[in-house]
Length: 206
Image (cartoon, rainbow, N blue to C red; front, side, top):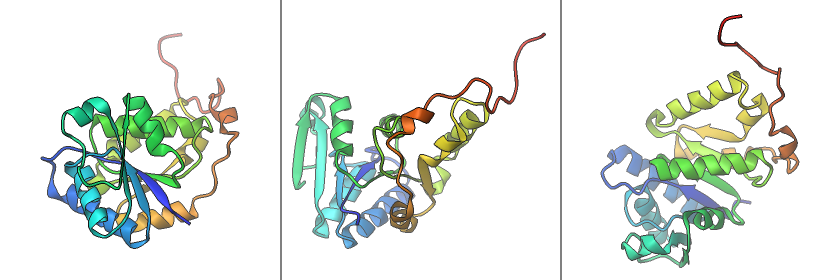
């Protein structure tokens, strides 16, 4: 049973409305299923609209924000719970603590950094829950291609392509979370890529 998810999302207010609409729909789905959200406590962008929708529908929203961001006035004023932390690193750790899954919405470098840390932790067996990338408007296609290139070029194992799942629409997300097989806590055994497995080319002249 899904009780709480961690959501990584944009706090940019000037993005296309289709991204905000996807955020609203995702929030409605979470709230309608009684699922709480941990997120970065923002009041604008996808962060803001998701928090607004979930609060309006009576769902629990937990915000985690560094003190310097709170001092800038970036925190949502109506959250059920607000944790003020010292650093961005502590923020990520608390956002991912005791959740049943991560949903990564489109976003900027902050969202990307959060997603990549979560993927790294799962690769190392330190985070075991589903990671769902919501690929609204094919936003994440270049990143997903880069992941494929990493695997093809032997920077990651083929197994590591199972660390994340990709949803094209919010309606797909909960089913993906519920049906994903458990990730093995011993995954660190497979973190290192063996020297000659999957090599596709060499460079330079012989």
